[in-house]
Image 1 (cartoon, rainbow, N blue to C red):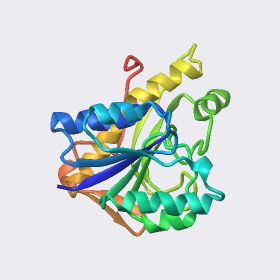
Image 2: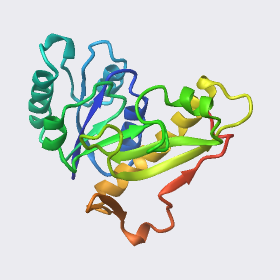
Image 3: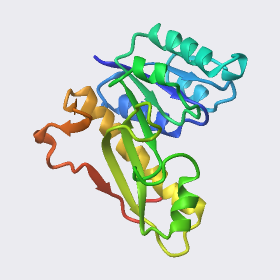
Image 4: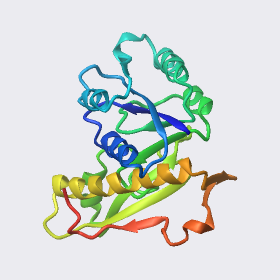
Length: 218
């Protein structure tokens, strides 16, 4: 069975969605460890309660980003995962780290990339007046938030939305789409070819973009 290491910085809601999918049998893989760059990350207790090994590597204890990245890679590699999964990991990773895990590093971003890379995505979406927003699961590359797209989930922006209401709708979509992408990968149905992602035709009934109605809120 394939294994993953999950990186978090906070409460780990996407991590929890993945752990729940593993526990239910929906996601046929093993979570080898959860690693955080913050000792106060709430997700660490959730992972430990699920029986997943956890560890903390505080980025503030390192002189440089490169030193932290090297130590993080060493800690990850001790678990020998097949894939590294970013789930609310609030650190920009350097090129050497990203290249070390080329083709083996997933992230979920709260926008429909390539729109709104970086931070404050919901605020920016509202400011631009878009009518559709969402999230993207993608391979991580040295270009920030521009790796090959695996799957996206789109949600409507409705009248009266503020950052909180829109963020909640997008987060509900994230919790659906991240386990889906990981399941495709775990089942060997996901292929990265010449910088683009191909999903086996047997999954044609599952579109690469999910449309989540406005009622799907948390």
